[in-house]
Length: 97
Image (cartoon, rainbow, N blue to C red; front, side, top):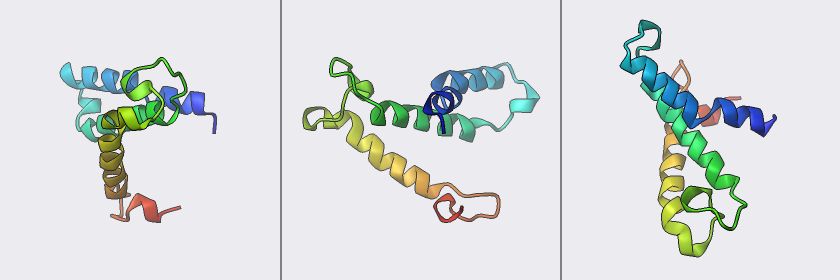
């Protein structure tokens, strides 16, 4: 998978666009709040796991002991979130192909 393409689709900008569509009450986007949460979660996860710039701040900085307060709680919550995801049959996504 090309990470650049995936990260563009799973981005905060797409989540913002979906929220805008909700705000102006476009019926096609009704109920997309879970998708917005998914997009924001994975956008931040990409930022944390792809952090290489030693001068970056917060979630875009490399994971270090001294900045653990920025990423540790998020990673714990994300782990629980991913384990809570289910397919349309109710099967946890972590148990599907």
